[in-house]
Length: 221
Image 1 (cartoon, rainbow, N blue to C red):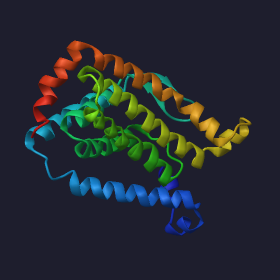
Image 2 (image 1 turned 45 degrees about the horizontal axis):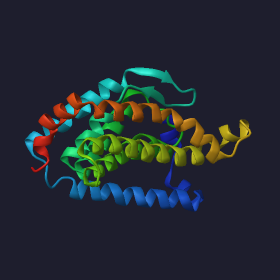
Image 3 (image 1 turned 135 degrees about the vertical axis):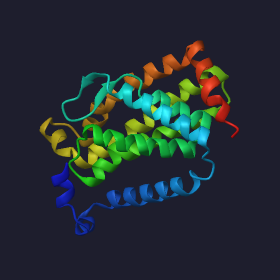
Image 4 (image 1 turned 90 degrees about the horizontal axis):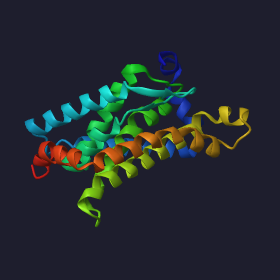
């Protein structure tokens, strides 16, 4: 990891494909907006909720059910607290929490071959989980909103990892005799069991009630 970071210099940006440069620009703009808009409504109570959700997610991420050969693991519902926080406390705050969680994952043990790949797989991929919080506005049954949000979050996270895989792991695809998109899309399917299981758990009435009692109080703050 550190050797890759040390060998990177800004001259490398000149030789990057246009889609990589566009991705970088969009991500920088996104996270600039996070820090500007996300910090407007933080309260002591909401910070406490964020810390609680972050801690629970990190503990759950340590329960690895299966480790993938080229990075990534099937873990136990670690995205549920992150998406729930965004669902009840707001997407902007959820994005900030996702960035913090991504940094924790990097410290825990990152699989990084390039700074841009590291940023996409460990920052953008977790920050985008907050988009699942938008499900609170969906015109569906109240009990279905959070489970649907978790599925949406899982799909978006999968999409970010697929793009990263196409950019930085195309050599693995060529060795397997597959197109980079197909290889990356299939490889990253390991993310969906966690998203589906999280959605099932969120649909349980007792879990929904517990989340409503804790995080629900912050919705109007």
